[in-house]
Image 1 (tube, rainbow, N blue to C red):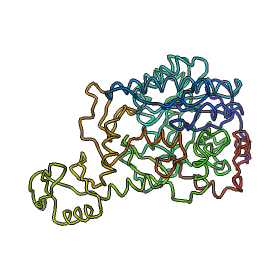
Image 2: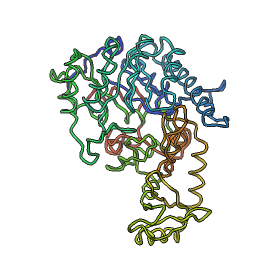
Image 3: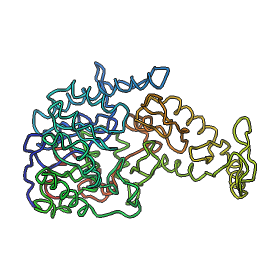
Image 4: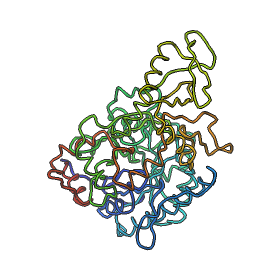
Length: 465
């Protein structure tokens, strides 16, 4: 195994090892501080981070606003205070070693305001900002205004080229690095474009090499690239280390840090990670962001699959083969299905899926009355956690709506991520994970239920394993 030489990140020489930022309360100050303390880069999440009361207990994020707009303002306030809190914890634990980064999602609700609030309230404690989930053009200007470095997360050279030409060339001095996140291997939301096939993964090396060549065109040949997604054993990436063709490279670990003593996730979640098999992580498109995402195929995701399978196209008037009347809703308003679809719909109704919910695509989805009530309640209680949400039709624009029907095939992402982060219920909530998570069960490092500290994990990583 080649030696890992320090690399300059956010103004300091550090180990080329980065903790991947994970959303709501999953990467926090207690996990990122120890990463920085080892001389690496710790990353806490700026997405609805936790705050604590005087007893050190998590303050529940309870929304009291009567309107979505009012609740959206509450959400932003929670996120800013939580982010500042986690930055302080991370800084204190790090002892001034390594680097501390904050991770935000560009498509989260109030992203710019949240980031401004965290960086203003935690001046001097945060050294860099990583940002993905969309095209974060303005992240460069925001980071530069606070004198810290920015690290856009991209999945292709084409995406970086667009970001550079539109905005980043104006703030090149504060571009600390570029995170290449493999869209077929990384956990959470993925950057698959319409031109890429989710069923046919492409090898990362050619894509990262293309990214490096694009960066070199812009005078960024020595700006670090952070390889994210699918990184487990460094020995599997040894040919990347010191490779003159790729230039300076760091490695980001998103999934392995979940299983550490300092990781804030529940013991039930940690146990579940050790029980996964290859293929248990599922690339899907149920997220209300509209992005592809990778998560454990648990009962929560299986219900979404089954819900979408119970779906038929309808017409509001008889057209072509859509000539079979079918009553929908409490008022029995008639829509028209094909003969085959009417037979299927009647079968689902007989099984108890009696509620037919309309989608934005002129289809009906059949669910139980209990699930229908849950969907409606979650849509009504929306607090605008995204810039635009397909599930609730919220948008942070002036109108407060996407202008489309709310989509019952999706789910409230804020609710399920808060639930899994703050309870032991892992089967019926969204469990993001990278596609390599099955390796917990086969990696001898974790034999007999061993859970390392962050320091022990980093020492293990440095050996190549």
